[in-house]
Structures are given as C-alpha cells and as structure tokens.
Image (cartoon, rainbow, N blue to C red; front, side, top):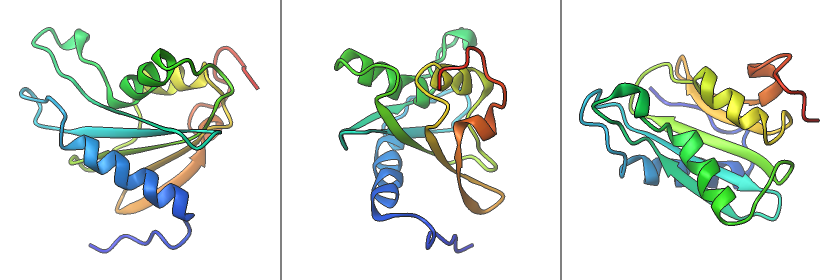
Length: 137
C-alpha cells in the first residue's frame, strides 16, 4: 500500500525517517512490535527514542516517552517542542494514553505525525487528547 506524504513538509518527512531509523533499535522480545519516535524542538534539534520492553510489562518504556526523556536530559523543557513523528511495525498505531499525557505536559500544540488506517496523520496533540490535564497552552 502506498501512503501519501504529499501534505507533509520536508522537515516532517525527515522526522518520519528519523523515527523509522530508531525503530529498528527497539527492544521488543515480547510483543515483537517495534516503535520509534523523533521529537522536533523549535530550534530544529531532533531527539529520538524507541520502545524498550520488559518482562514486567508495566516497566516497558514507550518510544515517545523515551524521546521526551532524551530531550529533557539535554535541557529542553515544556514549550520547546514543535512536532513528534511516531512509527511502528504494527498496524493502526497511534500514541497510547500515557504518551499523550506525557506529551501534554510539554505542550498541547505539538504536531503529532503517525500512520493509521494506511494514512499518514498529522494533527495537534490537543486533537488527540482533548481537554488534557493540565492545560499547558
């Protein structure tokens, strides 16, 4: 299936490519579902993350939260981010509720790019998590 990415800017296409590259590094021996995320800061710096599963499933780290932690460890804070691209080898993938909430902490105006139903979606986090807690923007 060919997926149209004509509506995405070059920067967002690059972000998807960064997410795909880091997805290959995921550690997912239990589900075999690899996820990669690339978080774009307003200064154009990109922070990547991948999922890291654990036998104690609740200790699994999602790619999105891994990318956020990478950015925070490098000194970035709420309001510093423009977009995040998330890719997976699984079908009909979108950020989980925990990741949506963590991203909300950093700004509801973050553009979230992901594939669902064979289409690349690009929408604001506030559309994925309406009335998120706490309201940050």
